Length: 335
Image (tube, rainbow, N blue to C red; front, side, top):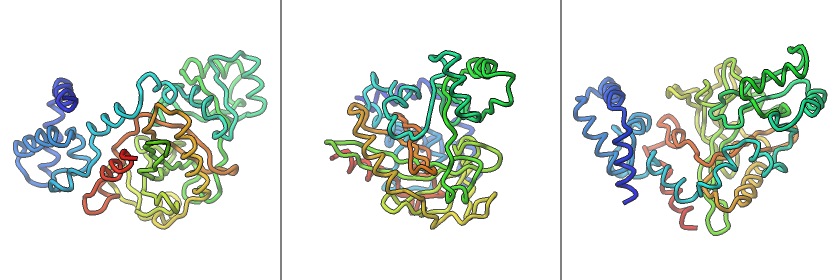
């Protein structure tokens, strides 16, 4: 019944014009007729809860039925969230200030709720941290994140007004990235995404990747021009080349020439242990994507996501033999 409800809801919300456009992209890659692809898209929607973007991004048109059955699709990801994460507790992760309060001992940096503090408190924060990162309370995908310097404003008051006007309600101490991570790319904090499924009091790490900035961006998010590679969750060694949102593969970083595959994440064990502890702190949120940075103070938490994006799980450029991560997720669900 839940599967049928999801399919009906998706059909009602579907952008058929874009669906046809995606089918034409498949035609350009495979020479298959658009109608054939559309029929297969619809079939995959019913059979695997795959959206038409899943069909293209995960290259379903290349996969057989056994391979397709291993993919965490949009519908399956939604079901995981619905099953494991109580909606009334989403705010603990949606609201960055609330997240910082709950997981304060894992942050290892100063922060200030600009909106709910007065000018005197903001001035004190500015005096201690003349440069800082500001971000929206409800932001996602790195949007609204900005590095500011007090010296660039007439006063701390003007700076506070600027932040509030732009809905950048959270200020944080700038993370000094571990020198080894700087070797990979120094302009952004390059984070590791660990996904946990908590069952029967145990946090299981079911997916691990590193996200790396590129170009002039200060964030490492794929949607902001970054790239990603898979990481061995036991050793912290990068096991693949990197790929960006467009599927372009990089054996070495385009800005630093650092070889990506085989790179060892520093303080990885500390980061893993931290995530395993953090995952047990909120008992009614059992499926989380954690973003970890590696600084001069060791591993620390950036944020947690109660609705982890599934697009990176099975990027064709990063996977082998068309096998997805669903079997591993199912095993974790069994406890």
